[in-house]
Amino acid sequence: MRFALLVPVALLALGCAKQAPPAESDPAPATVAKSDLTPEKMAVAMRVPMYPGATAPDGMSSAPEKRDDGSMHYSMVLATKDPVDKVGDWYAKELDLDDMPGMGGKSIVGMLKDGTNVIITIGPEAGRTLVRVKSIVYAK
Image (tube, rainbow, N blue to C red; front, side):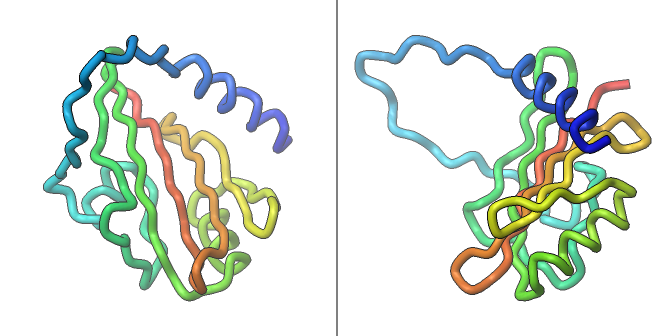
């Protein structure tokens, strides 16, 4: 069952990938995109709840990106002191999806009832648990 869920999501990710444009000879300096979304508002837009008590470390999340097909791509990183297993179990229950063990962490991959694709990776880092949440919300 898990493999059956993972294959369509992986194929979707590959199908959504865009080829990088050719490098400019003298590229402009990089700028950081700013968003007016708070972590709580971003979680609502992503259709993925924030883990209770988690914080969003500065500079680790990305501004939402709207694609040509109207879909919105979100990426948010959360941090908590709770152990990986507790966080993974909570997300699996909240989203009604299976969690899969990984190298020292857990992953939750699947499609929500409204059609939103979700990839959550949970792992230890620098004395805390980081939760990397990606979602694709499709236009209706």
